[in-house]
Length: 394
Ligand code: HEM
Image 1 (cartoon, rainbow, N blue to C red):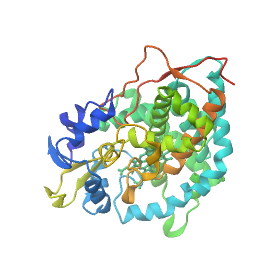
Image 2 (image 1 turned 120 degrees about the vertical axis):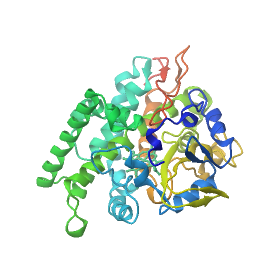
Image 3 (image 1 turned 135 degrees about the vertical axis):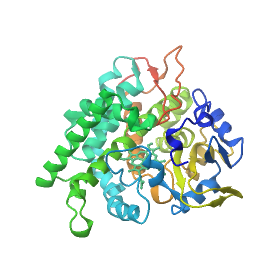
Image 4 (image 1 turned 90 degrees about the vertical axis):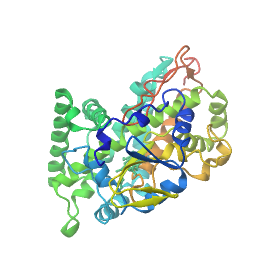
């Protein structure tokens, strides 16, 4: 049962998420709030997912990530409490808003430069020209690594992320294995360098821990590797969804320009509707019961965050700025709640402000229909082609 993540999952894989996520989440909600399909359990209601989040001693992340066969410990996502809590206590302050805020001018400069490179062309493909470049630059900045390495870093990380979507290390092609080894070598080089010459960055802060709190190189490598898996294509996906929704809603583009505070609400709603990581995995460590349904020990379980995000909403399947502050489960919950949520929101906000400042009006390229890649790791649009009148670009 614990190997279900590597087994074919026809029910999950057949979900119709490609064209319209609302249809996809209905598919998951229709059988109920807790049910079993193809040997895996699905939790789709807020109550059921909260129960799993509140009981990590039953719903193990460590067991769920075992089958990924990562060569380094994926800290802290593949670790269960109490060890995971110890890691988070150390890590949370290093990624808190007070650390992210001082980086803002540099992150704004980076995204402006990226948008300036295509603003005069009157067209872009969001993922290629913006969505993959920006989050990678942000992680390099956060870890004090040089921006000039961005393109190489993207090449390696894309190969690895593709592999993580396929789940089993044995699925890696030779080229992908080489990319992973190159990335490990690169990261290890920086770990060694920063142990000797610490900088004013989050990676140096982790390496500076001493005594009982000190981390081994393997632990730091695991953390860096997880950031590549968790913090790059999730933001890329979120950028592409945001730009897609704005492209088909010129009224929202205008409204945000008139009332800039609205931008944060639209971002929150797009995050609620379009989840880059919509199904999070767990394995039960003991027999349990959720919302009246018995789940045996050793059961692979999916928390279907995308379905729960539409529950009890007046406008479940569309942007609803009036209710944007009601919260959602896009960043998970409980002990494993996303560590990068502040950073991700900041990246989206800066990107949106700079995009609208340089390109005030845009739309989807005629004849294009963005489609999600599914099944796969991160749920993302494969491409989003935008066009605008260059007279309108600043
Ligand atoms: C829109 C962008 C993002 C989304 C939707 C997202 C979503 C999530 C979700 C759902 C989880 C919980 C996984 C689980 O419960 O198994 C998670 C965990 C995590 N995320 Fe994010 N994430 C995003 C961006 C980021 C960024 C930018 C970073 C880092 C810079 C990051 C780092 C992490 C880490 C380290 C964890 C593991 C936390 C733990 O296990 O204690 N994420 N993320």
